[in-house]
Image (cartoon, rainbow, N blue to C red; front, side, top):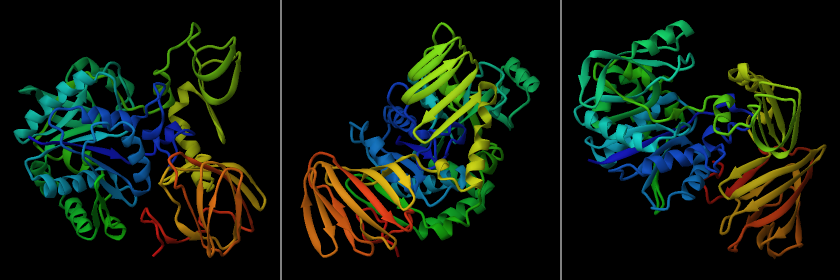
Length: 480
């Protein structure tokens, strides 16, 4: 039996702002042990028995960032595939696209294990055992969920109710899915013993899930199939990539796999499991990953505390001092600080909504922005000027481009740069520079084996990132 983990990486994680942002979402947040959630998910999936490939469904803007994160942990060089969404269309579309693609590449008898990129599972042995049980049920034609044994009456999760009188080998038949309950109802679920947290992880045979989708959500699977017909599939020695057509994908119904299929099908089973699962849904959940001191405080970074109790501080860039406060969340990043009472951790998303409404870019980007070729960090931004630190990976190059409204001055800090500046090609070394006038075509390449670091000083009437015309690009970003 072939098993293909399908990693869904589409959520922003607005409750984890200001670290999680649209261009650097929750799966890429580094945890105290130095790994991020998407790396942990990849490693957990690749270690399972029978895995022949890992397929990731993500936003097309995150492809190269995801590739970098996988590359640092994919020591076995496991085969990879990507499905790139132009925008989010919920989980039913993502699952349908993955199933149709896997049917074409691996056949209807292959099994897909659907995992979220932003969940944490701390007991990987128990998880692997649960997957074995799930694959056996999937082979019999069941759509399998992973039901998490509730340890307390959580009101922020949906629940799965299992039929007490319908045991299956390795699992239970599902009676129904229930929405997030109030506290009294949740307490009743925990006491009943046959209610489980809905983890959002699934396992099914490819042919079975497509049959059930065609029966219960034909509009979803048909629209996704039309999208795939109009989409571009490319292959390389690194991975296979299906970039979904934006116009066709916009016609796909925006609905979750739970609503579209799992709540309608009569073939749903659950594997109850206790695997140390967390959806890392708030800063309270993140804080639990750090050891507390004698006053119940949990600190990441340099923190001084006097008379303070039960606080969590995440401040890697500078010293933070607490005096006489308690039950606070303090999250400090170079361009934003968030302070919240622990009882209101779920309300951080409302700040993000305000930022979006005001078109403030701090909900979208960090000061350091990842690009396929490397990163840039905005050091200072003033009237008619901007200063950036640019890092270009070995062998990488920026697009051949032009700006209408700004000129740029590049100064090499370390490494070697090959620069196209209008009609000239230059090689620049440490402490050498070049000036690029507005309207001139230009390009930057790192021909060396170490990172190229330079300082860019922009000046002009308009310094927005959208003032760019690309003529050639190694990463498929040329303007049509």
